[in-house]
Amino acid sequence: MHMVEQVIEFADSEYLWLVLRQEALATAAQEPALAAFIDARVLSHGVLAAALAYHLSQQLAGPDFNSPAMREVCAQAFASDPSIINSFARDIQAVAERDPACRSYLQPFLFYKGLAALLAHRVAHWLWLQSQHTLALYLQSQVSTTFQVDIHPAAVLGAGILLDHATGVVIGETSVVGDDVSILQSVTLGGNGKERGDRHPKIGRGVFISVGAKILGNISVGEQARVAAGSIVLSDVPAHATVVGAPAKVVRVNSVQNHLPVTAIAGNLIGCFDAPGRL
Image: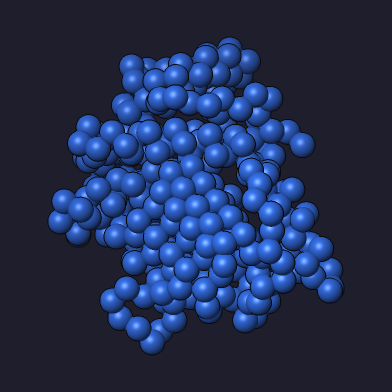
């Protein structure tokens, strides 16, 4: 297991920025072939918000909406709503806490598309709240094309969220995702095809949703619940419960506990199945 040696509790985003700069300086010295890249993405900027605006604009700009224009949109969102940057700090801390493959804070900052998709969603959600719906949907489209993550701009997401691997994650328009939630690849928070209006799931704090799970309809998943891989959830899930299957059924009510790394959570869930290979 190669997790960050010491997970830092970021009181604010300024401390995160100091840590990122230190790691960037060390990495640029160790890997000179990447020095120009690291300088452009981190070291040439004075504050975290400026670095994030540049980094995200380089990832998401297109031929009809160039990088400087995208960068300006991001900068406006960050200046107008500082909680976006604070949520990013919580998100990157979640990666360090729960992803065993994460070895530094610079690594997810530069390369983890789940983290970038969350940041882009926060910008798109800000645009949506400003009634700039077309631009918000454009940003959603760019994220979907670039990262294979599709989050509607109207969806409400908390902080400290981990999108592990992230490919194939879909989060619908009226979804609400609480703080400290972990979502693995190919998860859908979708409608059931029979409703209009408020039609998507409400995910409580600290929920873990494993690979390929589908949670459909205006239903609630209680805090600290766990949804096993491949499950199809069509009804409410109690807090602290583990659900398995298609349709999903409660197989265990868990004791309250702090977050575990994603691999540890997956290991605990394996015991819920009669047959191996479901995770």
